[in-house]
Length: 313
Image 1: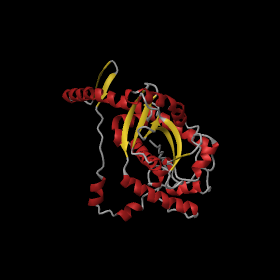
Image 2 (image 1 turned 180 degrees about the horizontal axis):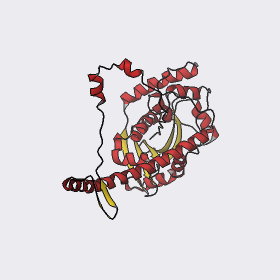
Image 3 (image 1 turned 60 degrees about the horizontal axis):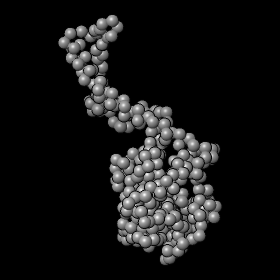
Image 4 (image 1 turned 90 degrees about the horizontal axis):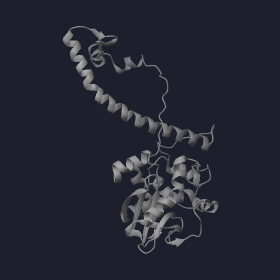
């Protein structure tokens, strides 16, 4: 590998990333995630700006705690004689293959990738519950294979660090040459499209960029939506638990009112009413009256559009 004398996060480093394929790009080129090869091609060819995610709370949080994650990893007994040195590198084989390593242990030829999700985030929850089956692990596994290709490394450690608890989860990853060969082929094909200004095929995931609001405003809205969605999910879990506890009470009250043989009973305003509901068997109705799908379409009307919001894990 060739070490490039650049500091991660600087303007020079950002410019360097544009003229090649990074580990983040690799995941997109392999057809995963919310970005697409076409949208990445637009960025690489200067047809649109890359989304500015620097002010996204999760990104800022991760950047702020990367040093804490590195210190925690280096304090572990098995790493006490090691240092996870951040490096900016290019592949010896082809300089378009680029990587920014959070840490590299030269003695062990080991790449270390640090991720610092908030302890309340869906990412940390999913990693804790699903481990290698989580979307976050799968995404970073691809990125780390790209890094190993650039560095010529045979192994890596993916570290998810919980800053609040000062602890982490470490996943050991080994080089997969079969996957790397496939990755290398697709990356070269993609870069040929960039170099020759040839559009890659568009897919179903290609979306229009917001034009009436700035990227910062849009991402601020999405971050707020994600925050409240997570809080709602926690409340829903509590509601489900309370409903489970309440269920046998409802069943007992139902038995009582049936045994009483009345439709309404109560004491001092604490009333129970038996409400009978009917449903329509639409499937039987359609069959009995021989109503065709074409007939049904005559009665269709446009409903109010609903919003489907997608948040990357």
